[in-house]
Amino acid sequence: MLPPRFPLGRELAVILGVLLLLLFVSPVAGWWATPGMNWMTPYALWLLVILGAVFIHRRDDSDGS
Image 1: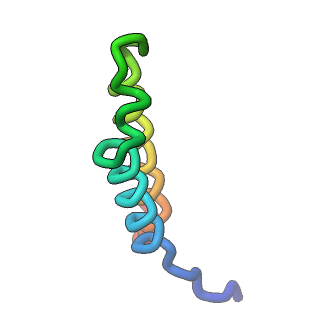
Image 2: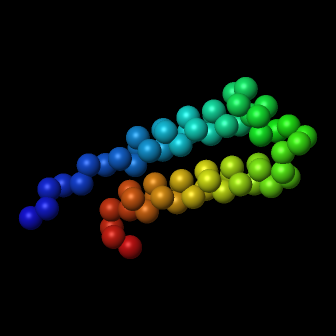
């Protein structure tokens, strides 16, 4: 019998939220928002956030579907 899985979904969601704040609200946003950066940079950052949310959802899915 396998031991019960440790629920990491909430902790990972908090980490993702902190990453969101770091990338879009803090002075780090000045790094990727410069005119010299590629136009695709903000979209790539949002894609990373969405993929992180999908990962958290799939990991925390307890009904197995």
